[in-house]
Length: 386
Image (cartoon, rainbow, N blue to C red; front, side, top):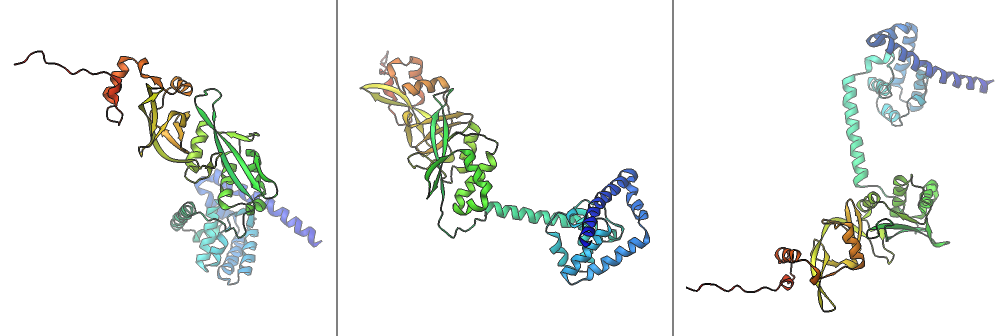
């Protein structure tokens, strides 16, 4: 019989909670500003006095267990339960204070949960004080978020890692525009028992569903990347071993992992991105004894890469891969020029127009190349001698 009475009590509590919310909602919608007055009048003096006596005992109770039982009894008087206040940090704050301060914390608990204050708690609800406390708590949350962002806590790995993840990237010609490339990514999961196995995106994301077991096997950096994949690519359903990144995804990956030495080429070289801007500059070269016109990729530090050493990627924004580093391209050529460079990166000077030759000689005379080779110049002779 005791078990059945307990079940009936729990069932009535859930129904009473709904009745409590509906009752106060109807009062607020019907009477507006007079809802609090109407609510006070609806309570009998005997019920209010009984709850006030219970609150006085709760406010001065030094024992945490007895205080908890008193609070539960008070909630039952209001047809409420602990589940109606889902926050987890309010009980330690109540135990830290006594007297009117504890009753003030209880009133703040109702305000945070956006519930109507009972009549006996209204004298303890200082709205100005509540606004100050909310602002202080908001600042503390901001400080904690800044701390977690700037100094994220990494779990210590006491044992040697028993699994590792390599992210191998390979430029692939675009099916629609072969002169431009897309970045293909393969995930190499390394375990002592199975060795190096290529896994699809979904198989890597599934590791997070077994986080309690799998996280212990990886280094913190590897597990951070796996969690990032699960958060950003959970909507993709790629089942292939190679994940081909779109233009926006490529920029997102480079901005997030370009400086973390996470991405690597097939030969083990790390792929980096530091946000640097490079540009294509004209250059003269000799092929089979003939002067030829081509371009080079000029880096901010003055280093150069020839066209066969460059992989051109997306057009918005234009990106270029050279020497294991991605660069933003300042002056991206049109697709027709890239198609021509893919087959023949240099053009004989004799095929250039006179207008282009004069322009190059006039504008490119200061970049260390002898552009006087483009044209034969004749010294002017005076027509009159005095």
